[in-house]
Image (cartoon, rainbow, N blue to C red; front, side, top):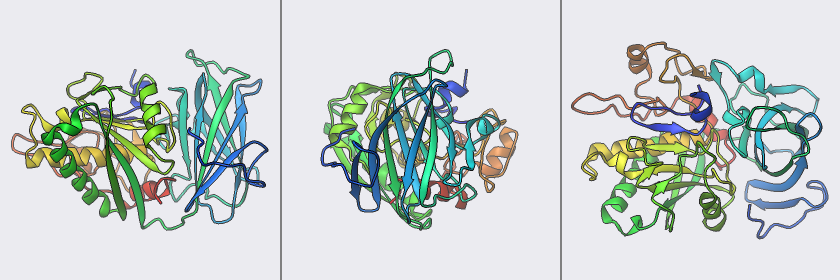
Length: 384
């Protein structure tokens, strides 16, 4: 359930709990929000920056004015307490999502878990979820302390991003691939990463997603944060300085938290498009290259499928089954299974399977994305 825990080390940030804004160029726009909101429009994505305060019940009620034609909402919340989504109500006052309904065996969004001081929720997630319609929607954001108790009078910085795009068959995702300090000067790392990005693009193309990747070098420590402990200020600074409000950031380092067998971790399920401490997918090139530190064809395949997998988490996808075989995603076209052999036989080629399926000769290609998984990815506000 939630998160990503692989025998070979791929993980999503939600796993920790389950297992144990730059404003440049934004101007206030009359009629687009409350007084003082910062609003910008970039193509089909409208971004509103605002704030709210949690009330005596520890809940901040966020009013979201959805325009006609807007089909996806990505809400990012940041505070000095833990934040999570409590509920979502449509303009008719119907509660279309409540956190407790999804605190069980089936996973829809990691936003229900108070695991960090930033949180992102995308709505709708599936075709079965209540679609956006014009009018005022309300999102309840809970603020809690480390002991799980609601805390009132907490100021929350909010970014609301609304996408106008009802085509769930075609999309483009922009990715910023950032090398940690010194890695952009290593020809082996660069060649392996660029080949892996090509494999990532191949996997996604079959699901109707076009990947547009650009590359940059940074002075980040090559030992990347695990994201379990809230990410890092350096990640937030990099997202603010180099990222844009319509791209996903992927950071390549030597290791993730000095864990030799961790291939990568997503900074949320889903993750955000704006600058937070968890605004990235972090990837270990060393783990993906294997023990010899060089990229054979099989290593490039694994590296590329890891990139597709982890950014799949970032866009809202869970494992179809967890490696404990007793938690599943909320999608109907990923068969439910309850043991290693059955799950590997039925789901082992799925790109979101929780671990690579290998024998002593090779690993299965994990490049299958089901129609419903593709739909979740297309509904993510960053799939434009």
